[in-house]
Length: 224
Image 1 (tube, rainbow, N blue to C red):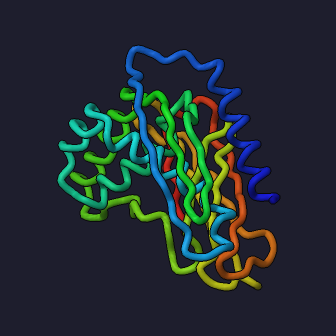
Image 2 (cartoon, rainbow, N blue to C red):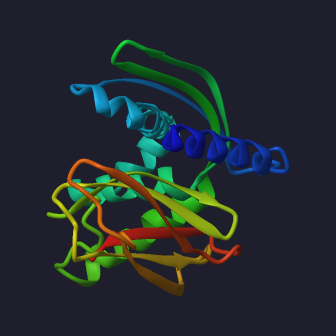
């Protein structure tokens, strides 16, 4: 019940913030939907958030301009990274059109605006990183041996992160960090923290939050 209340609150905040957003010339409307089926009864607690996150990523992936821009990258891992970053910080004015939770399946259909100018900036930075080093930068798979990120959203000056423990975290924590960039792809600041603040059993989910400058055009979330 606490998770559902938290999710509803975040959707409300996001919709309130989007009511003040006026799409610029580089914004394009995107639409996406996804149905997530749970294997366990307890998974219903996070099903709604998972279907929302994947519906958003489907909306980004199906955008014609995004597909065209992504064609300039050959590396598969970098393409995955660009998708995650785009879904996390380049989508605004999100409106949930339909939501359903039936038996063990949660479905979400949404519409939003994709900031193409920021996407171009992210892709440009990724290409430069590939050309300057053999290291591919950001993994693209936001997961490690201890936790996996289910979803993350930018809410004003903070990024809220929903994560799930892959093992019992009784006396240890996991480092998470956010690196912020301006419209030209220049690094602004990096903020980091360790989570969970208390013990977290395997399979359980929890929210974390990290600050991000209000003037940041994009950001990257990483697990340490």
